[in-house]
Length: 406
Ligand SMILES: C[S@@+](CC[C@H](N)C(=O)[O-])C[C@H]1O[C@@H](n2cnc3c(N)ncnc32)[C@H](O)[C@@H]1O
Ligand code: SF4
Image (cartoon, rainbow, N blue to C red; front, top):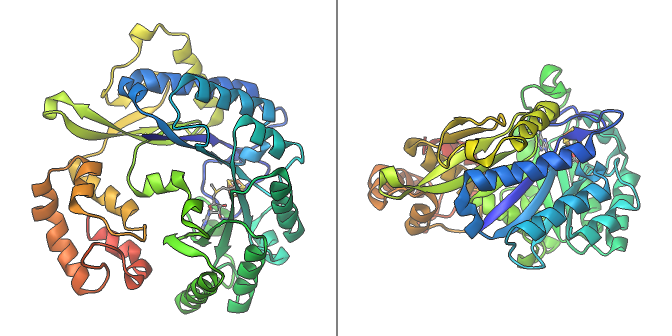
């Protein structure tokens, strides 16, 4: 099984806190050219890693940027290509599109549904108009409600809302009012993120006044957790809440389980495991990383589309491809850290056998060198349980916990 991530790199305006690969939407966006590039990018990755043909695509996530700006015709062409060219799990595979409440066309949602999209992730961020303005969002609280209403009316029963907390000047009451508003939208899923100040963002350059301190942030997270639990939501990952087990986001669960995924589009990255003969057919984890600039990305892909297949690179080769995509092998000493970075976020225990299967590391390496000595210490500190599941305390100090594996 393999997941597919598709990146749409344009936004109407950059938000003050955002360090995602997003670029201002040009006056004449090259959507058709970009779809061609995405299709050729995918074909190229299947030729670079031929074993992918034996994998089944288990989920598709179209993220951004602002994918809700993507014209339905192009969305349809892209998804039709994927469905008709590669093996997909079944008709009902999870296909998510991210939508910004300030960039929604009333015709688009139904056209996306016809194209095969069955889940929407709406970036509401807050229901407080002052905060939305400060975050640099292009929408107000009313737009949030309208976006959710349109999604419901169109027949989407799988809807996620992205909401942030620990926002500038945010009090506990304001944060809880946001949660109350989000819950009143009756969506099956909520992603509740603590605001982080990322480098290369407006907020990093000019930090806003009144970011809640650790005590208040803890109170908001704690009271928020209590409120969501009372409302019937179940936390299955540090930031992810679902009303039912089958409302969990399959695509993100694959990331947190350290599963493989193909990443196409400007700035997209992927993780593809291959069996390497040189190391006794051991599983080796390859990372792919595309250029960030939409134009350089398209130009790189256009270059390879004109080349004969025989000149294209072979599987497992490291370095920069002609397309500009970087392929690197994750070192043995890094892989366990990367696994823990993802896996400890999930609210379920993991086993050594699972770790072995997902990382390709030997049992001896996992047990003797790292897991047993480090995990033992964590169990003593009540950061993880003796079945290797992050505890409530462990979740609070998750970043420190993960560094223990470095
Ligand atoms: C890839 S973003 C894009 C979603 C969509 N472009 C939008 O903004 O409506 C996914 C989510 O990550 C969260 N996010 C982005 N930057 C963040 C930050 N610095 N701190 C916390 N959450 C952040 C936001 O909730 C955002 O909706
Ligand atoms: S709309 Fe989303 S991706 Fe675009 S700048 Fe804002 S947070 Fe970033």
